[in-house]
Length: 123
Image (cartoon, rainbow, N blue to C red; front, top):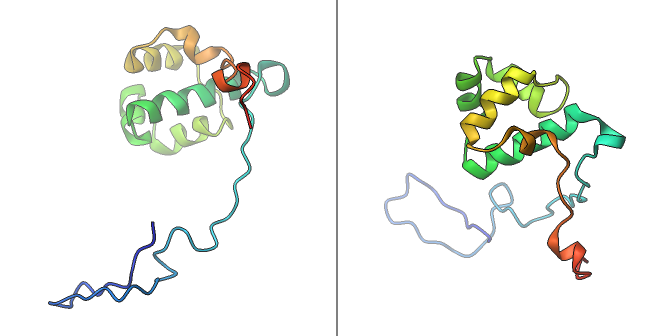
């Protein structure tokens, strides 16, 4: 969705329909190639766990700060773990599983293939 020029100090704003390239999300957006989910064989358990924690946190709308407060780490330490640069400890994975309300195995197993890929409709 394109946004138009807007002056917050203008008492009677008129939107002229011109695009502001600094605000427009659609103008020359970089193409992001989809990445496959990490696998235990190729990437290791730390990356599989990091991806699962990122997914579950996003799914529940939890920020890195909120997770840091629950686990007892700094936000920077959680960021390192989100990226897979530092591995989550088993105790931290247990706390995260309780926080997310899921079984620990959800955070340490490889994701299943998407249903559309299994159905043959994957493009």
